[in-house]
Image (cartoon, rainbow, N blue to C red; front, side, top):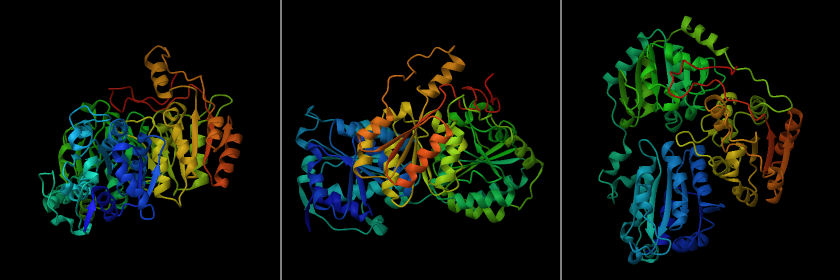
Length: 570
């Protein structure tokens, strides 16, 4: 059957089971948007206020559903506005496919209007970037992009299509994604089947890991985001309970292991709990699962887990011995590896090591709010008490992000969406949109800092237009809180360009978009506002005021070993 390139794009997306795309139109991508109009009964398009918001929405959709998120943008500035969102997905291993359209082939390389080499720009921040110069390659290129995005360690893929390719015609034959291994590769040198298949793990490797676990007297599991990506939370729980092994989690793994479980020690690293940081530091064996030893976790990497052996299991060979030297490793599929490992691990009762962990867990910072204001711990705990464990929580980046990670009790995977690796202020509102669109029957609550929210509050237009019942809690301390915290501690209280005392009024801003706004300066007002927003089942913004000098504690100074944390500021 003869089809135009733009039609082929839509048909290939439908082949892959795509039901929603996020994006923003423009001249170069008009042919595809015309086909989206004609196929609006088959595929939904969410028009955001800005292309960056669309990229974050596709990301949030992917993180919360486990499916590939799709975002579209036009050439030039439309494409470059996706870059931050693509980089965010890349750092956190999120499978998204970004489709951009460029100027026609005849205009490429001539500094044409709204021309940019988006393939070249995004090569360092994608698993692969394509430019489809020939219509005959288009269908297989899209199919291949979805395989690459989802296989192995997931990540973003970009497809750039010149406008004349979207208008040209060629034969189109639908392909069942389950048998796509037979489709020839377009630009990748690797065989598609090899891309899809994880490295084989030998029985000897499994046995070696089990023997190290069984021999350990003070074991700890350091779990990363790879547990969630691989859907391995049940296996992690079974392993920890079988051998009574404490579990410390990275920021990206906050929902991988139940926060209230007695074996959970909380987050590890710069703002990790004393229990996690001390457990890793004093352990004789650290089993690292799907984690990459970020500098925010390790602190002084040379002293990370200095008293024990580190054994790493990961799908990505590039992560082995990159930041921390290991005593052994397995490269392979996490879920099947843990499933094979479990029967070889000895059942063990709680020990003195577990009792020491329990003692460290009691050493926590005080949570007394500054006079007349709210405390972040109260906000997190109250929201959790009202929305339950099935709600999806998103954040921006900064102090509020760390408070949510510390105080909110997650128990179900894919319920905590945050930008970990890139630390993208402006991520969360778009991610909340994607999460709500992908999970229409679930509550989505977004925690934002007042600094971060300024960077994406234009997406209130999207939330309002689609009547997405997202509750946004702006934790408003009138400052760029995390930067101010560093200025407080390490820069002599010189608050250079961090005070935000010039608006906007977030309640009036919400109302300008047709969204109900609330203000809360104490616990009673917050309870009333949140309950009203929850009962209404409509979009809402709550401007929640906290003290300007509330700090994120514990804290490890940059470059110090993680056992040198402080719980209070004197």
